[in-house]
Structure formats: C-alpha cells, structure tokens
Length: 616
Image 1 (tube, rainbow, N blue to C red):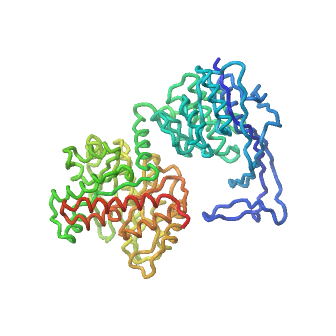
Image 2: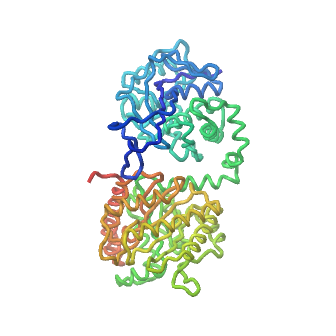
C-alpha cells in the first residue's frame, strides 16, 4: 500500500447559521449583502450549528478513502471508520457565519507554523497541503529530508499566500513531482494542476468543475479546492490516467458532503454512470475540450484581442478619409503593419481577420494565420456577411448562415480557431423591437452552434450602437434585455458557454446625447449590467470600442477593471481604438512603418495596463 505524509494545518470550521433578520447586513458596492459583525443592536440567534474539520484533514480523509495509508506530520490525527479524530490542542478554529448564501469569516489573525518531524520510515509521497504555513526554517528542513530520501516524491499545493519567490519555496518547487495551484505561478512548472472556480487543467486536459455546491452542504471554496487537489493526487498514486484524475476530482465535489467525501469505488461508479463526464474525453467529445482550451488561451490575463476584420466598406471609408488607395496591396500592407509590430504577442492573444487577410502573405512569405500562430497568437475570422433590413422594417439582421458550416470547415483547415459574428441594434424611440432582438439572438445562437460543431470558438457580438441619442439608463435596460434573450437562445441550442466568448458594448450614454457618461459611471454601470445578465460559466467577455475615442475606450476599460473582479475574464477587443493613431502615422506609406508601429504599441500598452486595477 502506498504511503503519504501530509504537511499542513488542521482547522475546525464552526458554521453558525443565523436567523433571517436583515438588520445586521449591509450592502457592498456590488449590491451584495454581507454580515456586519460589529453587532450594535439586538443579537442574531443561531438556528443551527455544525463543527467540521478542514484544512489538512480534508486531504487526509480523501487519500484514506482512496486506500492510501496517510498521516499528517507530528499529529495523532487519523481517519478511522469514517471519522476524523484529532488532538484539539493542535487545531485552529475558524468561525463561518451563514445567512442564506451570504457568508462571513472570522479567522485567526496568525496562521500557526506547520509542524515537521522526520518520520521513522520514508513515505512514498510527501504532500505539502494548501493549508500548510511553510516558513523558511520549515522549508529548509523539508528540503534537507528530501535530499536524504530521494525515493520520496513531493507534491505541493501553492496558494495565494505562498511566497513562491522565496529561496526555500523555490527549492521545494524545483524538487516537486506535482505542483497544484489556485493562483498564478511565478515558477515555470511543467504541467501544473491548475484549479479555478470554473475548471481544472492537468497536462493540457481541461474539465469544467462545479466548484460550488448547494449551500446546505456548507462546502467553502477553500475546502473544495482541497478536495480537487487531494483527489487528483490520490488518483495519480492509484495509477489513474489524466482523464480519470480530472473526472474523479469533479465527481468527488459533486458526490461529497462536507466531512464525508466519497470513496474510490463510489467515484469510479459515478464517472462510469455519467454520460456527460465520460464523453468529455472521448473522440466525439474532444472537440468541446479543444474549444474550451482555445477560449481560455484567448482570454489570457493581461492580453487583449485585436479586431483587424474591417469589411470592404469599412476599410474603404478609412482609406478614403486618408487619401490612401483602396487596393489589395495597401490593405495587405495595412494589416501587415500591425501583425509585424515587435512584441505583439506580449499584448495580444488573438486577432480577428477578414477573409481576404487570412489568405494574404506576411513578409516572410507565410500566410498571416501561420505567421500569427508562430507568435502564439490565435487567428480568428469574421464570418458574418453584413447587415440586411428585415422585410418592411428599418431594423436589421445579420446575414451569412447559408453555407456557414462549409466555410467554417475551410477556415479550420486554414488554421483559424475562432470566429466572430456581429449583430447591430440601434436604440431609438421605437427600436430595437422585441422581434429584432429575438431574430438576431436566434441567428447568433445558430452561428455559435455551427462554430462549435466545427471545433471553432464563437465570439458572439450583440452591439448596441454607440452613435445614438439615449441615456446611460436606457443603454443599461436595453443591453440587459438583449443579453437575456441571447443567452436564452444559446442555451436552447446547447451551446457550450465554456467555449464561447461575448463581445459587447459598454454601458454608456449615446454619442449624440448632450450629457456624456464619465468613465466612473461607465465602469460601474457596465460591471453591474454584466454581473446581472451574463452566466458565470461563460469563457469570457471582451469589449468593443464602438466609436469611442482612443483615450475614452482606454479610460472606460480601466474603470470597468476597477469594478472587478468578475466571474469570467474581461478584456478588450478593439479595432479603431488600437489602430487609429497608427493609421494616421502610416498614411499608406510603408516608409512610415516605424512611427506607425510605435503608435500602435503605445495603445497596446495603455489598454493592457488598463486591465490592472488602479487606486486612482
């Protein structure tokens, strides 16, 4: 039998459920209720209380249920006959006050240093649990022990509080066979197990994870992350495949109650009996995995998506205004200007191309799709074919569904891995009508379904056009209505939202309205609207600039960021707001490339900087 020694701390979570009076709750900036623990009036009453062990005890329980002989360093804690037994003197306490789905935590001000004592017999695995407080002295002791016991393999869970760059942590990370994390890694680990609120990634494989459960189970996010990590470690030790590790981790969250995780036999039965879980990794279901992976790459933190997909009419207007000949060579040189900007890959994760551009060549002689791929930038294609009026109406729909599956198949062979489709809505006294919203949502949903069937990530873009006369309040109401109908139709078509990206307008007053919205107003209104109308499982949200000025688009993006965090990644997908200054510098003359590229790079830097919070 395999043996595991855990380094970690034991906590005891005391769950106190409150009665339903609201007078001790206050709202935060997102209109969410939080318990005001500075009681200043009549006391709340607790109508239930539960005491559950957490921290390293979660990992101990899971590994024992996998048939692995497990101990926690320097503690008599054991998992025997379905119960966890511990020495209360070695336990830290955390109080969790619950009211409906609102939770407040009372935690120890100082985390107890984790213990270490050389074991009598070397274990097969040493697991540094997420709950561990690894000080420099403790880290050096563990490293020294591992140096003397080369056969003991190390698994380590890096959390936000871990000082990854400290010397003792770097030594442990270099020694580790498996690194698990729910935060960004500064160490260049190969194939870490990445645990987020929506999915788990391991060795290039990804599976959605229900990292939330019904509140009656009292599972906190911390204990769920511990459950996922320990399940994957136990599955690895028991010789399971990467796919099985991920499936077992998901199933253990779904099947478990707090303090009562499932044994290996039950989990194996669960994943075999769940068609969805099994098909996630079969050849038929693999395309869904691929689009989820590509969508996540497109939403790489700190990077944006360049919209270089202007149609013939749009680019003609730009060139005409600058007296630039509108021919294929000048259009090619214009796009080449952006794609060959040094360091583009540091700021851009994806580029939306027009059909003509996808077939043109870079200076290297390669097609632009291949050229971008070598920079680790994903190429996508605008696949809609423009706007058309509804019959007997001045409202518009987007055409292009006819023959779309065949075109998508061709684009996939060319190397494109995502597509974009735009629906446009004008806000007036009589529009958009319910009919126009409904029809365009249906079209967008069918497009998205066709994309995913072709292994291509769909960007769905329902744009409320900025060039109008309306208030920010009217924008909020109409944008919410459009988004609700869009996601309703996407659900009807069984579109996988984890492999789908929303491109949308910000919430702001129309360009022709006499009082323009301030960045602070735009940031809060946009954030509130998205939180209310966009499902949490969506792969990400990107913003169009939609006629905003160059600086306006950046300032508004900064304020949206300041109103985060969000359940999904958020970034920009700008065209004019990135390209405008470069176009003015280029003027159709390639001799101006250096100046134009510098202007473009300046906008990339400014907008990527806007993806970080500021205190200003």
